[in-house]
Amino acid sequence: MPPSPSSGGTTPEQLAGRYERITLQLEDLFEGYAESGFDAISRMATIAALLHHKMPHYFWTGFYRLEAGELIVGPYQGPLACAVLPGPDGVCWTGVRERRSIIVPDVHAFAGHVACDERSRSEIVVPVREPAGNVVGVLDVDSDQPDAFSEVDRVGLEKIVQLIFG
Ligand code: SME
Image 1 (cartoon, rainbow, N blue to C red):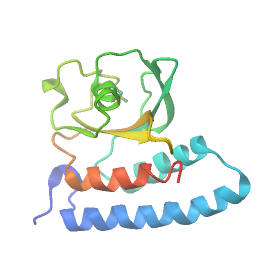
Image 2: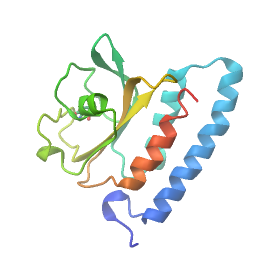
Image 3: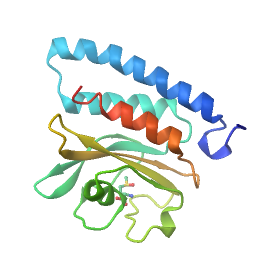
């Protein structure tokens, strides 16, 4: 497959390889975390930092945590974000409600999209589940390019969020 300009000029194979290497690096890092008693928020912070700085097609990378019926911003990298997503609108809430990953190629075409930064053009949201399977938040990634996210991103990110409580 040819490189895709919107996913940072990488081919799908290169992108999948990049997710695999990041996953291995996170697994190594989190072994040390277990010994030190670091928690899920420490893991979220490290995931956001590593992904954001390794993925050229990411513009905003972070977590929203479900707290008392609202989505509250968690660890993130990128421009200043909305602190609270009260729902029911938005891509993040759709991911929570439907308990599945959501890829939005054009945020302007998604009814109810919440624009925290006007530069965001496309988005992917992946639910975060605790060990019993309940959704406790989402990983949200925005790009300033349209149609930046594919199934490769979905598969890569779904594996990565499993490391939060892993
Ligand atoms: N666009 C999201 C809101 C969060 S920001 O993208 C950081 C949504 O529609 O839920």
